[in-house]
Image (tube, rainbow, N blue to C red; front, top):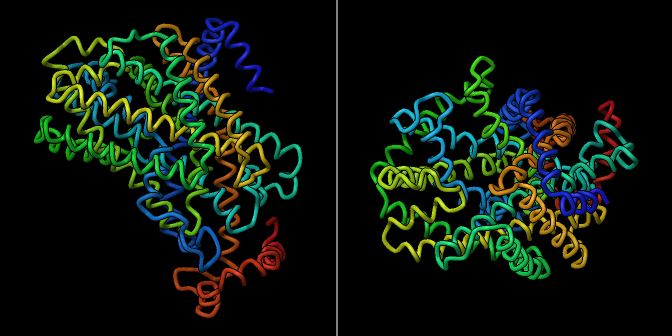
Length: 522
């Protein structure tokens, strides 16, 4: 009902809708930005702690359970669902924008180039994936190890007990659904904008919201067909195909672009990113108005976008991560996408800036067409643009396909097999929200998309904090029960490792009861 009201109001009053959303978003970034910066950084530290702690030995499932998907398919799915569209959309445009308008340095200089790469690595690095990882970890642990249904509210049982089965749980699940819808709609809107930019370059089709609406309709039909085919078929195949096309595009640009400069900037930029990690993580620039405004527009917006995406990506990653250990899960979720992001932005960002310096008109273009303008100055430009349009559509379909599954799961009492009709309903709703946000964004299109992400993230951020606390409380109790310290009790640990799936499931309820008896509040 709430989503329907938002769609109706946005359709009737698009301009007013955009103004209200922009006003709320501005207030949040001005007064709550510090909170976003601290929270996201604490989540990174929490993930590192879990990797180093005995909790990392626990498995997301029964002791002898094997992963459902092969590692390469698993990584492809979590990455495609996580930020594929954003990576292609901002691959050249974000470094180009930071190069001309950096937070502190003078634009267009060598120092601005280094700061552009460092800032981009930050936005797509550990912070984003720590948010996803914490939500996914809590849900996977509760669902596959505790036998809970796949609802975020059930993750909070160690804190709130059976109250998660009542109104409190409903509030949590509604917040997660709302954040999921807004987060995915933002991504779909961005995808439609860049596909529009691509067909504008290839076929001369105008760039406007009418064309973007047609694109959304076409891609919606495609991803609904994929969603109907089921998770293991549609999403897995599409994710693998996306990674192949992305790898092909990446390899070509690396070779025909300024290869040596790309490799040097990747190395230096990574060093800058890691060397200034703490400073960037907490820098809110209270005494520098110019940088503060830049942070509100970029870093705080990104933290809001990733936070609004975290229920969707978290639930999806949890669904495909059964059978992984906590340590394996966190290391893969944190490091693999971060490394891919560094490689991608180094290649496309450095190439984009280098070509834009030769063709200054690129600097003033809209973000959705900048990448295609860069390709226009390279060999095989039409082929590169065509591959990019297909890749964006693939990421669009994969994200929407995953989202329909996640939303169907959240609104079907946590069912791992939501009905096809529920997924279709949610698919249509996502498409409608994406188009409404584009209409409300006016000429740039991005304004309302950014505002919606920041607004949706605020209430859900409290849920993420509670999920982290809940998971740690629950997992610590299990560590205590099995005496899984750094030198575990041999008999207990052998019993844990050698237990069969059938024995684990038969004794699950007794095990949970023992935890409640041994640990107050569990």
